[in-house]
Length: 212
Ligand code: DX5
Ligand code: ZN
Image (tube, rainbow, N blue to C red; front, side, top):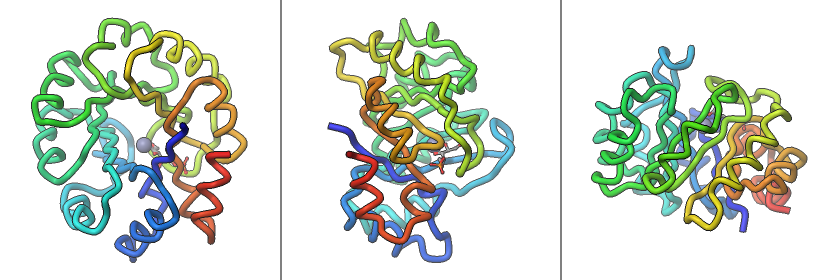
Protein backbone atom coordinates (compact mmCIF):
# COMPACT_ATOMS: atom_id res chain seq x y z
CA UNK A 1 0.00 0.00 0.00
CA UNK A 2 1.24 3.48 -0.84
CA UNK A 3 1.07 6.10 1.90
CA UNK A 4 0.93 9.88 1.45
CA UNK A 5 2.77 12.16 3.85
CA UNK A 6 1.48 15.70 3.28
CA UNK A 7 4.18 18.36 3.60
CA UNK A 8 3.01 21.14 5.88
CA UNK A 9 5.44 23.53 4.17
CA UNK A 10 2.87 24.06 1.40
CA UNK A 11 -0.04 24.71 3.77
CA UNK A 12 -1.48 28.12 4.61
CA UNK A 13 0.54 29.14 7.68
CA UNK A 14 -2.17 31.59 8.69
CA UNK A 15 -4.49 28.71 9.55
CA UNK A 16 -2.37 25.66 10.21
CA UNK A 17 -4.84 24.09 12.60
CA UNK A 18 -7.59 24.06 9.95
CA UNK A 19 -5.17 22.84 7.29
CA UNK A 20 -4.07 19.88 9.41
CA UNK A 21 -7.62 18.94 10.36
CA UNK A 22 -8.76 19.17 6.74
CA UNK A 23 -5.97 17.05 5.36
CA UNK A 24 -6.51 14.39 8.02
CA UNK A 25 -10.23 14.32 7.31
CA UNK A 26 -9.43 13.99 3.60
CA UNK A 27 -7.64 10.70 4.35
CA UNK A 28 -4.00 11.70 4.60
CA UNK A 29 -1.75 9.07 6.21
CA UNK A 30 1.15 11.05 7.69
CA UNK A 31 2.07 14.70 8.20
CA UNK A 32 5.53 15.62 6.86
CA UNK A 33 7.28 18.37 8.85
CA UNK A 34 10.18 20.06 7.05
CA UNK A 35 12.61 21.58 9.53
CA UNK A 36 15.16 23.95 7.93
CA UNK A 37 17.92 25.79 9.79
CA UNK A 38 19.24 28.21 7.15
CA UNK A 39 22.61 26.37 7.15
CA UNK A 40 22.11 22.88 5.79
CA UNK A 41 19.68 24.44 3.33
CA UNK A 42 19.36 28.12 2.51
CA UNK A 43 15.89 28.50 3.95
CA UNK A 44 14.12 28.64 7.29
CA UNK A 45 10.80 26.98 7.99
CA UNK A 46 9.32 26.41 11.43
CA UNK A 47 10.27 24.67 14.65
CA UNK A 48 9.25 22.95 17.83
CA UNK A 49 6.46 25.32 19.04
CA UNK A 50 4.54 24.76 15.82
CA UNK A 51 4.81 20.98 16.10
CA UNK A 52 3.80 21.07 19.76
CA UNK A 53 0.70 23.10 19.06
CA UNK A 54 -0.39 20.76 16.26
CA UNK A 55 0.23 17.51 18.13
CA UNK A 56 -3.02 17.48 20.16
CA UNK A 57 -5.28 18.15 17.17
CA UNK A 58 -4.43 15.15 14.97
CA UNK A 59 -3.72 11.43 15.19
CA UNK A 60 -1.62 11.42 11.99
CA UNK A 61 1.94 10.23 12.60
CA UNK A 62 4.39 13.14 12.49
CA UNK A 63 7.10 12.48 9.91
CA UNK A 64 9.84 14.99 10.74
CA UNK A 65 12.48 15.73 8.09
CA UNK A 66 15.45 17.52 9.64
CA UNK A 67 17.30 19.61 7.07
CA UNK A 68 19.72 20.93 9.68
CA UNK A 69 23.48 21.01 10.12
CA UNK A 70 23.60 19.65 13.69
CA UNK A 71 20.76 17.17 14.05
CA UNK A 72 22.14 15.37 17.13
CA UNK A 73 21.58 18.18 19.58
CA UNK A 74 18.03 18.73 18.34
CA UNK A 75 16.79 15.14 18.49
CA UNK A 76 15.33 15.38 22.01
CA UNK A 77 13.42 18.54 21.04
CA UNK A 78 11.63 16.78 18.20
CA UNK A 79 11.07 13.59 20.18
CA UNK A 80 9.46 15.59 23.00
CA UNK A 81 7.34 17.71 20.68
CA UNK A 82 5.57 14.63 19.33
CA UNK A 83 7.39 13.43 16.22
CA UNK A 84 6.91 9.73 15.47
CA UNK A 85 9.57 9.41 12.79
CA UNK A 86 12.72 11.54 12.83
CA UNK A 87 14.78 11.65 9.64
CA UNK A 88 18.26 13.12 9.45
CA UNK A 89 20.39 13.82 6.40
CA UNK A 90 23.31 11.46 5.89
CA UNK A 91 25.34 14.48 4.68
CA UNK A 92 24.81 16.27 8.00
CA UNK A 93 25.85 13.44 10.33
CA UNK A 94 29.37 12.98 11.66
CA UNK A 95 28.48 9.55 13.04
CA UNK A 96 25.22 8.46 11.48
CA UNK A 97 25.14 5.11 13.32
CA UNK A 98 25.25 6.98 16.63
CA UNK A 99 22.60 9.45 15.48
CA UNK A 100 20.21 6.70 14.41
CA UNK A 101 20.82 4.95 17.73
CA UNK A 102 19.91 8.14 19.57
CA UNK A 103 16.64 8.45 17.66
CA UNK A 104 15.66 4.88 18.48
CA UNK A 105 16.73 5.33 22.10
CA UNK A 106 14.25 8.23 22.26
CA UNK A 107 11.56 5.73 21.25
CA UNK A 108 11.12 7.06 17.71
CA UNK A 109 11.44 5.55 14.26
CA UNK A 110 14.75 6.50 12.66
CA UNK A 111 15.13 7.73 9.10
CA UNK A 112 18.01 8.75 6.86
CA UNK A 113 17.67 11.07 3.90
CA UNK A 114 19.93 11.50 0.87
CA UNK A 115 20.25 14.54 -1.36
CA UNK A 116 19.87 13.75 -5.08
CA UNK A 117 23.66 13.76 -5.62
CA UNK A 118 24.50 11.50 -2.67
CA UNK A 119 25.26 7.89 -3.62
CA UNK A 120 23.35 5.06 -1.97
CA UNK A 121 26.48 3.17 -0.94
CA UNK A 122 26.40 4.96 2.43
CA UNK A 123 23.17 3.13 3.28
CA UNK A 124 24.54 -0.38 3.02
CA UNK A 125 25.77 -0.74 6.59
CA UNK A 126 22.78 1.11 8.08
CA UNK A 127 19.93 -1.15 7.04
CA UNK A 128 19.45 -2.78 10.44
CA UNK A 129 19.65 0.59 12.16
CA UNK A 130 16.90 2.47 10.40
CA UNK A 131 13.15 2.34 9.78
CA UNK A 132 12.88 4.71 6.81
CA UNK A 133 14.97 5.89 3.87
CA UNK A 134 13.98 9.26 2.40
CA UNK A 135 15.23 9.92 -1.12
CA UNK A 136 15.11 13.56 -2.18
CA UNK A 137 13.79 13.97 -5.71
CA UNK A 138 14.63 17.71 -5.71
CA UNK A 139 17.45 19.61 -4.02
CA UNK A 140 16.19 20.13 -0.47
CA UNK A 141 15.24 23.60 0.75
CA UNK A 142 12.09 24.67 -1.02
CA UNK A 143 8.66 23.35 -1.93
CA UNK A 144 7.20 23.58 -5.41
CA UNK A 145 10.27 22.42 -7.37
CA UNK A 146 10.32 20.11 -10.39
CA UNK A 147 10.85 16.36 -9.88
CA UNK A 148 14.25 15.05 -11.02
CA UNK A 149 13.58 11.97 -13.18
CA UNK A 150 17.18 10.79 -12.89
CA UNK A 151 16.33 9.77 -9.31
CA UNK A 152 14.04 6.94 -10.46
CA UNK A 153 16.90 4.49 -10.93
CA UNK A 154 18.15 5.36 -7.45
CA UNK A 155 14.71 4.58 -6.01
CA UNK A 156 14.74 1.20 -7.76
CA UNK A 157 18.27 0.48 -6.51
CA UNK A 158 17.33 1.29 -2.91
CA UNK A 159 14.23 -0.88 -3.21
CA UNK A 160 16.49 -3.77 -4.24
CA UNK A 161 18.86 -3.00 -1.38
CA UNK A 162 15.99 -3.06 1.15
CA UNK A 163 14.76 -6.46 -0.04
CA UNK A 164 12.47 -8.02 2.57
CA UNK A 165 13.54 -5.70 5.38
CA UNK A 166 10.90 -3.72 7.17
CA UNK A 167 12.00 -0.26 5.98
CA UNK A 168 9.85 2.44 4.42
CA UNK A 169 11.10 3.95 1.16
CA UNK A 170 9.90 7.55 1.01
CA UNK A 171 10.36 10.07 -1.79
CA UNK A 172 10.20 13.84 -1.42
CA UNK A 173 10.05 16.71 -3.90
CA UNK A 174 8.00 17.44 -6.99
CA UNK A 175 5.55 14.62 -6.34
CA UNK A 176 2.31 14.95 -8.31
CA UNK A 177 -0.05 12.27 -9.68
CA UNK A 178 2.26 11.61 -12.64
CA UNK A 179 5.57 11.45 -10.75
CA UNK A 180 3.86 9.57 -7.88
CA UNK A 181 3.12 6.73 -10.27
CA UNK A 182 6.70 6.65 -11.54
CA UNK A 183 8.02 6.54 -7.97
CA UNK A 184 5.60 3.83 -6.87
CA UNK A 185 6.52 1.72 -9.87
CA UNK A 186 10.19 2.18 -8.97
CA UNK A 187 9.51 0.92 -5.44
CA UNK A 188 8.62 3.90 -3.22
CA UNK A 189 5.93 3.24 -0.64
CA UNK A 190 5.62 6.67 1.01
CA UNK A 191 5.07 9.78 -1.10
CA UNK A 192 5.70 13.22 0.36
CA UNK A 193 3.47 15.79 -1.31
CA UNK A 194 3.27 19.47 -0.48
CA UNK A 195 2.00 21.50 -3.42
CA UNK A 196 0.11 18.55 -4.93
CA UNK A 197 -2.12 18.48 -1.83
CA UNK A 198 -2.19 21.88 -0.12
CA UNK A 199 -2.20 23.98 -3.29
CA UNK A 200 -5.39 22.31 -4.52
CA UNK A 201 -8.93 23.08 -3.48
CA UNK A 202 -9.97 19.47 -2.84
CA UNK A 203 -7.56 17.58 -0.58
CA UNK A 204 -9.50 14.29 -0.72
CA UNK A 205 -9.38 14.26 -4.51
CA UNK A 206 -5.72 15.23 -4.52
CA UNK A 207 -4.84 12.39 -2.12
CA UNK A 208 -6.86 9.88 -4.13
CA UNK A 209 -5.09 10.94 -7.33
CA UNK A 210 -1.70 10.44 -5.71
CA UNK A 211 -2.58 6.95 -4.49
CA UNK A 212 -4.11 5.77 -7.78
C1 DX5 B 1 11.85 20.29 0.26
C2 DX5 B 1 11.02 19.57 1.30
C3 DX5 B 1 9.79 18.97 0.76
C4 DX5 B 1 8.80 19.95 0.17
C5 DX5 B 1 8.05 19.24 -0.91
O1 DX5 B 1 13.10 20.57 0.76
O2 DX5 B 1 11.77 18.52 1.89
O3 DX5 B 1 9.14 18.15 1.74
O4 DX5 B 1 7.89 20.47 1.10
O5 DX5 B 1 7.24 20.15 -1.59
P1 DX5 B 1 6.56 19.83 -2.98
O6 DX5 B 1 5.73 18.58 -2.79
O7 DX5 B 1 5.77 21.04 -3.26
O8 DX5 B 1 7.68 19.58 -3.96
ZN1 ZN C 1 10.71 17.06 3.24
